[in-house]
Structure formats: structure tokens, C-alpha cells
Image 1: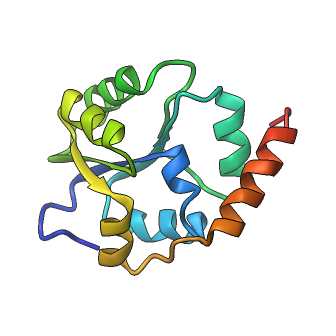
Image 2: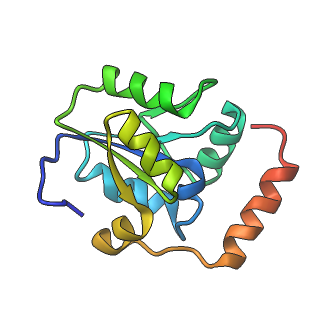
Length: 138
């Protein structure tokens, strides 16, 4: 997926949005081929993000850490000076957050369609959510 713009881009995924993908590891690998930096933003505790990324073998260039999503997007934008900053999310709140933080917003469905990424089924998403609730260690 190269939306016709610059590949000098920082791409951030909302953690819950990333869970909507059938193969997050392949998505990150693909995104690295046309993005300069790729990472995860979440309000969840750091260990939840770390657990998910380790389990899915995702190597991220940044993650939100112990701060809110807006502050994280602002920090990432200041740290990674690329031509474009794109936030992949799934809700109106995500879109509003992107606008507030001065990032481009891309709904996961549009991103998946353009890039050829497969979305997970509801069963897979529910299963991951169940495992995450029980995991309390990175």
C-alpha cells in the first residue's frame, strides 16, 4: 500500500486495531517496506503492548509506553521527523485523536483493502482478547 504519497512516513497502529488483523506480523513486515517507522499506540499498560508484540513477533520502532495516546502521537511526531504521519485506527475516537494530534487518519478497513491485508474473524479476535485478560506477565 503506497497511498500515492511519500514513503518517508511514520505509521502508527492503535493496539486494538492491530488485533483486527489476521496476521499482524506480516502487516508490520509489509508496512516496513514502504514506511520509515512503524509502531503501536495504546492506553493499555506497557506490558500488554509488549506481550502482544512478542507473541506476534512484531518489531516496532516505537510504542506509547506509560502515557496517553495523544501524548504518544505528539511525542512520536516530534521524534520521527518524516514527511507523513499516519495513524491506523478503527473508531471515530481514533479519527478525532488523529485530527487533534495533526496526524493523517486511515481506517483499518481502507488500509487492509489497499495493502491486501487480511482482517481476522470475530472468533480469532475474541480468542486473543480472552488470552490477554489472563496474561499478566510480558
